[in-house]
Image 1 (cartoon, rainbow, N blue to C red):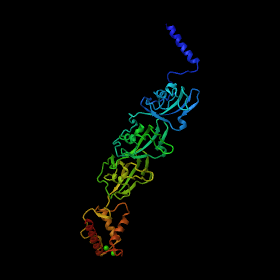
Image 2: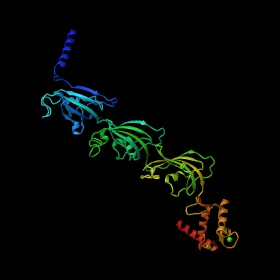
Image 3: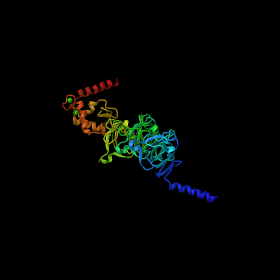
Image 4: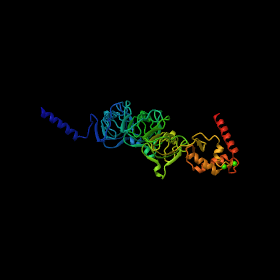
Length: 456
Ligand SMILES: [Ca+2]
Ligand SMILES: [Ca+2]
């Protein structure tokens, strides 16, 4: 019994080898190239894009998607393609190559197809799968690397600067911000980006890298993207590697983190003070843009004088000499949407600051202020030798004495002698090189008048 079955099997085999290949009952699938990595296999109901050559068994070509310059797109199991291919494509991976031999009853049967395929013809389809997705797909997200520290992550309406590599599922690149050496910048969650990224970027941290696979209905849909030579074909799944460089919200303020406190600290910096400070300025990805260490002396500035970006001016206030801070400045308090020089547009900046010295200042518009009550009879105090006139030397000596005794303060950040000359000129109305009692009185009254106007 066993022997007989064996014999009949052998005969069957013999026949199929001996004769010309007659009609086969079912498709024959030759998976002649299977990629090493296969994230999913085609199932019934999936949408697929593939290129193919259709030949007869003698190798003669009767149809080709390559000739049309467009891959076939359709849904598996829905008769979008001939039955044999519908079946033969199941289990296929993206980038896999298959030869599917299809008997006539699973192809065009006894009818054939016009003048292209004669009746009762066995066909061979050579396929390479480019793309696969399902209506039920979501965005697939994989976190590639995430920073140790993340105080805040991307929220809806944040403005994000990120780098990306974009490919199709078969690995072919369609765009990369790295090639342009410029980040992609966008508001998130407001429809500026394709849906998959609008959602996918939410929750990302500065420095984080994520890998996304986005189905076409959350990307560029059936139309794809591009006009003449489409960069992204219709119904394409997109793969993105996204690296968040920085982000900010329009309401973000300066973040100050004190990294070293100063032990002895009697006074802190405020508006109008003249300060010297060291700084490093970098992007949030660590790129150093500027450093005061490039110069022989520290940077100096009068706070509140509109000489430095607002965020830095603010960050340098209430600081003790010797104190160090790390500060994050959003672009609206930095160099804005346009950037400046090597600072990219909309960049968030990170400063490392150290206050080196501090000279208390005087209010704007003043050259000198009294720290104690001013002398009741100012002219008499100024006119040391009591000759009813005050030349520059006498004036200068008097002011310097007030400063050295801690009774008054000159405007910092300038040569004291030139500040005193300016003060003298303000009082010497007739420019004869002498201040008289009348001139001083006039000026004092005028200032009082001015103050009243300002108060009004
Ligand atoms: Ca005098
Ligand atoms: Ca005069």
